[in-house]
Length: 503
Image 1 (cartoon, rainbow, N blue to C red):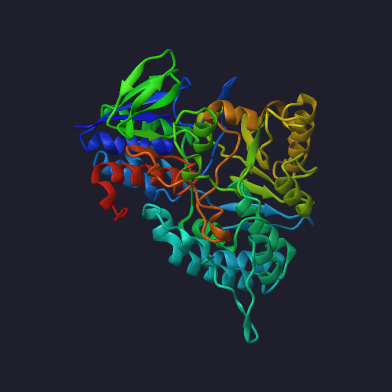
Image 2: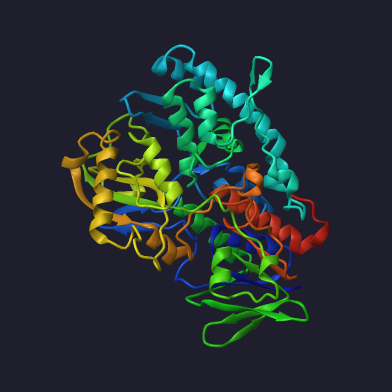
């Protein structure tokens, strides 16, 4: 039985903790805040409840596997999962709207043809076929296996360029893929929206980001009854059932190094907790910034994705009046200035005047004071900013409220009578994300291409005995990806360097 110290109680860290406990190890999780879940939080007020992190689940198989491997019982015994149908409704800049069915390629083609004109669905289907090729080429090495020491093969993009006459024209970004291959500005906006949902600048994201819409439209979109926080509750309870110990309100101030390997953690107040292995679920850049980890050659330590530096603004809306019959659970209201939105993300701020917003209307009674009200969340990908620099876009309260006003105005395209129904709102910026997770940035998923700029830190750190889990580690950000990172770290600790990935 090994002693394992885990830094942080995020979803990836808890997934690793539960698996390691089942393998017979003594696991203690040290969390600097008062609760678990990382970015998977809930805001409650006056009987309303809001998911302030992710609101929908993709690839639920990741958490089904976690629950089977840590208790031989289905995930659905702990949480109620329902497929969201339609998976999403989209409102484009010209006012055109389309609802896309859940996990139905034929249904998506038909819906796009009806809303955008004959041929739109066929062009989207041809794009998804190429995205499927990219998925098949990259799925296992980028999701199910540890990142190899030589990442050079991942520098090449797996997305296949379509043939134009006798030539194949290679795009350099997801936005360029949309412009060249989809033949309609609305389809291009649809594609960009999938990148923005992960906090990616579509003009910087490599063509391989095409796997994101492919993944969602192939494997479906799911909602957890009670909100996504209920999933965090279930994972936490599973950890407790496997005798994982949690110590909340306890920052880790250092990793103990002895004989060239990690040997424990230093805690606030000067106490040291000995350990045979250390799993760091905290943001990797925070480990550098706060000097939690000692190193002799700084250049030897991994650098997280250079292509991701965006955060998220969430506006929680308490509304009078019930959700109307047939309302879409998720509506994406696309920006009227996509070029300005991309420029703002690329330049680091200030945010554009009219961003793409995602409006979630779950209609879940567990999140409402009664049936005569509705809880709605509106989110946008934004420049993360920096609290230590002049011009931080989230340091000016008036500017924050003005931006939230523009988000709510855009959300009116998804919620009838929004302004008249509004009781109150709460605005959460990247500064709130930093307080809860240690970083303003919402890490994106691992992607091949772009010279390796979108590869996160490998799970094993250069210091033996130290491992990285969660959204800042391989295979990157997103709820499903974080769960995968926990499985990879557990495999590496249990099986050592011979571990070759999930089966």
